[in-house]
Amino acid sequence: MEVILKTDVAGLGYKNEVVKVRPGYANNYLIPTGAAILATDSNKRMSAENIRQAAHKAAKLKLDAETLAQRIGELTLEIGTKAGETGRIFGAVTATQVADALKAKGFEVDRRKVVMKEVPKQLGSYTVGLDLHKEVKHEIKINVVAE
Image (spheres, rainbow, N blue to C red):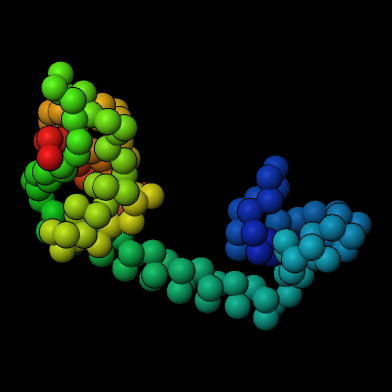
């Protein structure tokens, strides 16, 4: 029996893929749980249209991410924090603080897209990665200064 997967199923296939499974597995598990639908001609056409629209949306998201990366360019952010006399800061600089500093400069970046290679615990300069898209990565510099 052929079914079209509506979600990724481990060991079987990925979303919108047509797979051949045993009728009992399809009728008793995949279809009732909403993980798959029967692979009729109309469902195959609908799936092909969904794939085409998803590809168009993915291309637009990638283009938006590339545009944002170009606009950000070689930006250096300054993040002020409380620090002791030895240069050790109280707490750490977080991804939320970096996202807020970017927002203050006019760049809307979600805090979950900020990747800290090393957590700043001292005053100084650090490199922070931005995962703007699965194919678009960008790096910026941050300077951690005492308030």
